[in-house]
Length: 205
Image 1 (tube, rainbow, N blue to C red):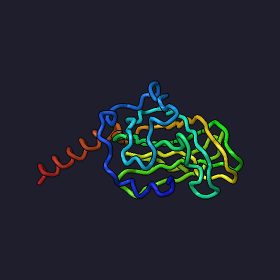
Image 2: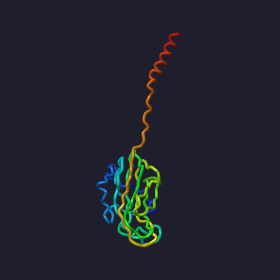
Image 3: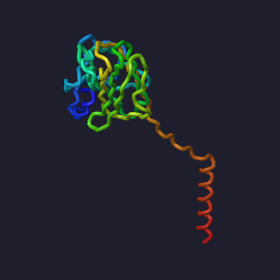
C-alpha cells in the first residue's frame, strides 16, 4: 500500500480552513489507537496547516501486525499507517524534516516514511528503523506547495505485532531575498561632475 500511494497523489485536496492556519504543535497529540489520521486507501486526508518559520513537531502513534514476509506485509492491524497533508507557504522553504518512531517490533522490522507533493510527480521514499532519528529529505529543500506525508509499517523478516509513537520534526525558513546593492558614496559626486562637463561643453560650442 505504501509504495503505491503515488497513484493517488493527484486526488482532490481536502478543502479545509486549516490550510491557511499555522501548524499548532499543542493540538496535534490527537492520534488515538485506531487512528485519527486515515490510511492511504481513504482518498481524502486532513490538512494540518502551514509550516511556520522555525521548528515544529507533529506527534502520533501507530500499532500494527506483520502478517507476511514481503513488501507491505506489515500494514495490517489496528492503526498501521497515518496519512496527512501540510503546506509550505509562499516565501518559505522546508529545510529539514526528520522522524523518530519509538517502539518495538519483530526482527528486521522497517517502516516507510514517504513524502509526495500534490499535483506533481515529486516523491521521497524512505525505509526507517525503530528508535532511530532519520532525516527524510536527503539534503533537498521543499518549496511552496501542498505535501502529503505517509508513515506506516512496511516489511519485516519475522511475523508479529509492532507499535510505537512517532515524532515528525520540520524546520521552515524564509527564502533568501537579495538585499539591494548600496550605491557608492562617491557616485552622486561623479554624476554631478559628468553633468557639469556636459554643461561646459555645450556652452563652449
